[in-house]
Figure 1 (cartoon, rainbow, N blue to C red):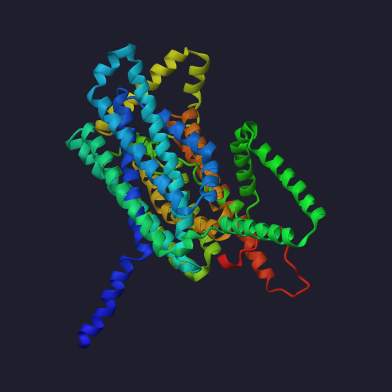
Figure 2 (tube, rainbow, N blue to C red):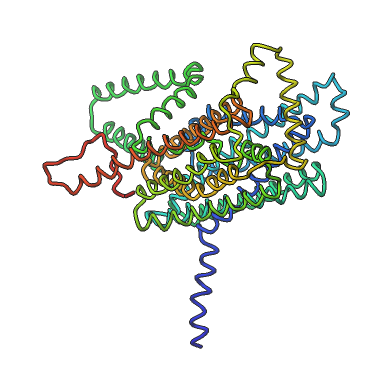
Length: 562
């Protein structure tokens, strides 16, 4: 009996955890990110395959996605703020998955009937299909942005409650799920396309999103039921209360005041109607998105965590990550696909270590100091990347102009020649990836480069989680959506700039220059954070000074985050 009694509480706790709102959010996020990672990996492969092994469609897709989030980030965030939480989450979920399903079905049709489509209407029908694919994929990405803001930046905060340690643990767990799905999901869909076909890959992704949408919809509803606080939004609650008070005041005035006061009240009502009619005008409504965009950026600038957010955005201006740019450079330095896959796995493990370290350091040192420590760790590790520029085996050569190809295309050959060279380069990259890696005299340079990139992930992800929680804790509930929308826009803006930087200096001899510029931007980002941390910690110290010594009101005060 004693053993049964001792086991019962453990079983109850086990069942209670797996039915809690926290676990349901984890499960829903895992399903969502799994589908996102599969789609993001597959859509780039599909677009390359459709356009004859050219990166043109992939580049157009990337530009459209980045530009859309850059322009519409604040508007999406404002929409998240002004609507009920469950309504926003459900609509974002349905739009995102429906767009992916439709895009997958359209791609299946294109793959199956590509020859027939290319011969109809002089190929314009096939071009229209390409435009529809990119449009649907962009809609799915915008809906995914809204979903990310809603769940990761708002629902997680509400479910965690007032417990900041619980919020840090939830943020870290969500990030670990991101890391794992970022590795496993592309592996799965890649195997399906490798042993099956692209047609099968499209069908699998469409089927997965249909299944995932239904299950996620149910999980969102369960989380909403288990967390009553999600039904209350501060902005909506205040406006409702003000409306009720206004109606009560009108009722009291109508019962107690005389005709003169009543006529004055009617005049005020007429004026309010005129203002409402003006706002209902089409010209006013046409300018509403521009006002929202402006108000969002102004609100972001006025936040106490402005420099912390900017510091995170500056980290996107870098070539020191496991994207197509660094992967392409690695191939030119003699690393094959097998070695790169192992390095990507090591990078993911390093990122997971960073998320675990974040929770431990935050408990010991506080949130703001955790960001400071993470910044020092990341910069210290990136010094290895700087050293790799001058190490043996580095192709870095300042005598080779990084802008030679760009200047030749601008002032030498025609635009058609530029297009031909872009396509030829894309085909050459793809063929190089399938061939054996070139022979290199020394691997010292590339080894130092990837050692710095991998170890820096510990500081990077710790810093990312720090800024994420600072935004969660210090942005008021009614502005969480729009502020996070502007933050996403800033991230995409710096990400776009780093691609432009690569376009201007595409040759491997100039990659060392790109590394130095990248580390410089990372350093500038952390300098912004150090400024923010210094002022925040100083304002915290001023709280314990004598009554005569008052803190500067312009300095952000974040006592709960220290």
